[in-house]
Image 1: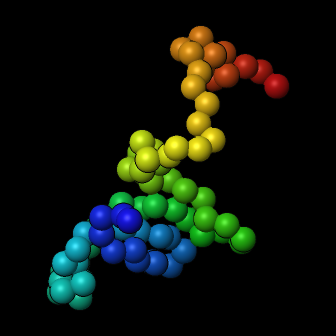
Image 2: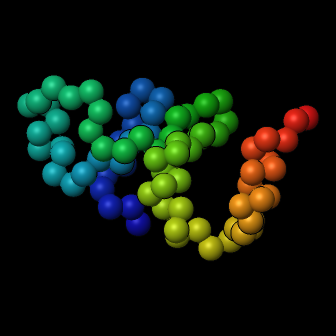
Image 3: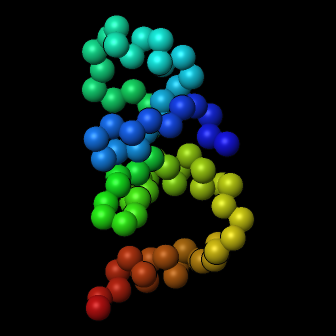
Length: 78
């Protein structure tokens, strides 16, 4: 369970803090909470903020790599 309330603004999925609903129409805000993803045709593209928020919870499909492997992948040419 994520700590907050999931909200959809246009095509963006946001996680807002509990209690936000009571003040939603009383204050002006540009961004309140964490953007989790952007809805595209048939999927949701997750944001870095979402990955940072729950990354430590991922238990499957994790593959540890070394610093050298990460460096190689960043600098590899197609």
